[in-house]
Amino acid sequence: MTNTLHRQGTTESLKNDYIIFAHTAKGITREGSATKLQEFMRICLKYHPVNIGDGKQGNIYKDDIDIQKLISNQGDGAGALAVFTDLDTLQKVVEELIQADLGISINISGLLDEVQACCRRAGIERHSAEHSLGFWGAKDRLPEREIMEFNTMCGHGMVSFNFIRKMIDYVKLRRLTPKKAARIMAKCCECGAFNPVRAEMLLEKVKKGAR
Amino acid sequence: MEIDKKKCVGCGNCHAICTMGVIYLDEDGKSIVNVDECVECFTCYRVLRNEGYPVWFVRTIRKILFFLRLGYLAEVDVCPTGAITPPQLEWPRSIRAVFSDPTTIHPGTGVPGRGTDEIKSNDVTGRLRKGEVGFVIEMGRPGTGAYFRDIEKVAMALAKMRPHFEKENPVTQLMVNPETGKIRNDVLNEKVLSAIIEIKTDLDRIPEFLHVLEKVAKEVDTVISVGVASKCLPDGTIPHEEWIKKAGYKLSVDGKTNIGLGRPLYQEN
Image (cartoon, rainbow over all chains, first blue to last red; front, side, top):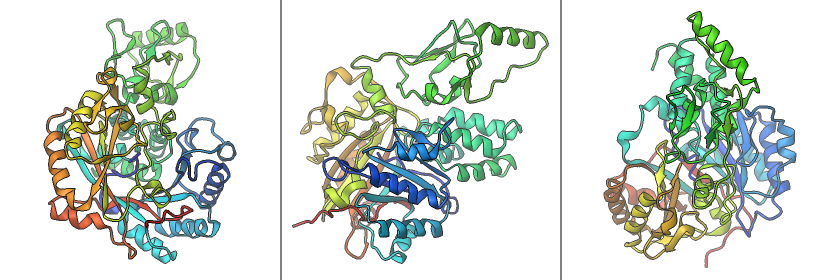
């Protein structure tokens, strides 16, 4: 999936948005990956991610989810991910993952130059990289920039344009706080790539009429 | 997805949560799904918690409030009466859920939903090697969805350029013949939330591929998210950057980085 590739926003806003994920390859690293994925999640959890989850079981914002159970139920699978809002913490996670030597592929989505600098400080050089070339085709069907910033935080596109509009309206009308609205949006994003802290910051601006 | 009209109280929560915006209020004041446009992502069913209230209770409350000129405002993430009912999907409609619901593991790839490995495991698979570039062409995202007939149109246009279609990709696995990009007929009228065409070619062919893609993108009624990837040089340089710039396209400031911790590391000859 290209799920975390097309996140929209200003460079300033994207500085609060780093997704680190473990990924396994069928026939190479997937078989017997359960304990490695569990360890990946434990390491991430130690550094207080703002979201964590996997596509199969969901993320920590789902109703009645227990993070310890989510980790222990992690079987051999495609992967898991966690979201962090600053580079220093991300670097500590990377350093601990290097030490743990899990042998599964680790990827980071975020500002490419910042991520490269983070890797270098941790003593490694990046292996492969991917850019977005943006949106093509019937772009007239896309909504305004603000909606896109929220929508693209869920790489599977599970936070609908209409729901984002509703949450923005509810925040403006003081029916929901930005924090609550951001957490509800995060529930829609199954794998946990949605960044509720960044969403909350964007909604705070909306609330103050700054956007 | 289906909505049980005997249970629906017309609160409208499912209308907004629907990723395709295809749930609406029928003449009788109950919600209904436009099944042609529904992609079976199951988001409404998963996210809207069933409050389990008796239907008569909610309807009575609504009537009283309406009489008093007051509105009924359910919490935004609930279905008060559990009216959303997941259907038993049969082929070819079931392909919608396989591509649209990220909790579904694709039988061919072992990856949830429409996902693929692309560069995420490139350190151990060597999918993209020195001198190669990968394109991930995600059709239908963000938020518009795509029919396989449109996905086929793009795949066939690209196929003429003789790229390598990634075998372990859910769209490639629906192709009758990857040399032509033709997709099996029985799924062409199925709509999915998005689907990813994944190809690779030589770096120096970047301009011609993007030119073809730009042309065919104008012929489909959906949006396309385009990604480009390559294996970095030993000093961390990204080889495709130079070619993309030469071709006149703008690269994003953010992106995805495989940091190379997978083992055993794929060794090129």
